[in-house]
Length: 122
Image (cartoon, rainbow, N blue to C red):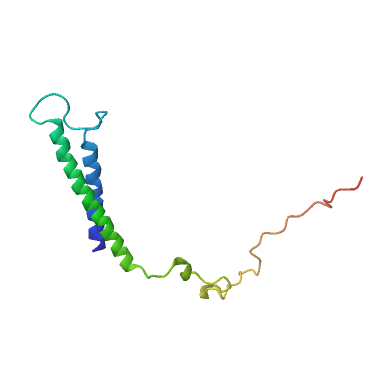
């Protein structure tokens, strides 16, 4: 069910983007029609595209709310912080740490110094 609503939501988003780009802007942008006479006036096209935009926007908001409700139903109700282990607890998979095969350490070796690095009192 969630996948169906999500696919419809994505198609509505793409259609809404397309319809908004088709509308005539004040600068002329990607608008359909334009000036002059003709069979279709600019105002009628804007009204039709405006209605389609409103319908697509309402459907988009509806699918957004539906997806929110579906996600809320699937949630466990617990906070993310509740799922974290307490600071003193060690997870079960970390209780036994295997030793290195050569018995070495994971820490890098200490850098060797060429002598006393303390400044002299001269």
